[in-house]
Length: 91
Image 1: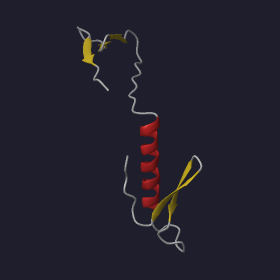
Image 2 (image 1 turned 135 degrees about the vertical axis):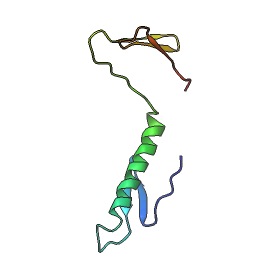
Image 3 (image 1 turned 180 degrees about the horizontal axis):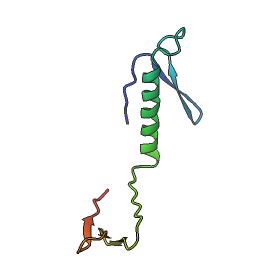
Image 4 (image 1 turned 45 degrees about the horizontal axis):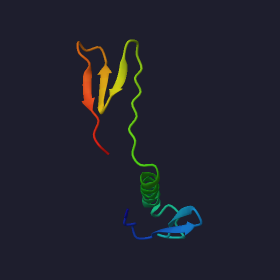
């Protein structure tokens, strides 16, 4: 994966840790602070996406509501006359 860092933002690897550093202006710590936060979040998202992958969770809360998996189809009963069937996409 690739992400182009903004000028003045630097990433250093120290063992298993990545450090995102703000090198915009050492005299003014607030300069580039927003870009530092965005860059840190993007690097974290890239690492998480590669190591854990993407997951989508579903929590059903309510009396009489249920969901069941039938092959590659999710069948959800949410109070409609008929159950809702949703095909699960391939990864």
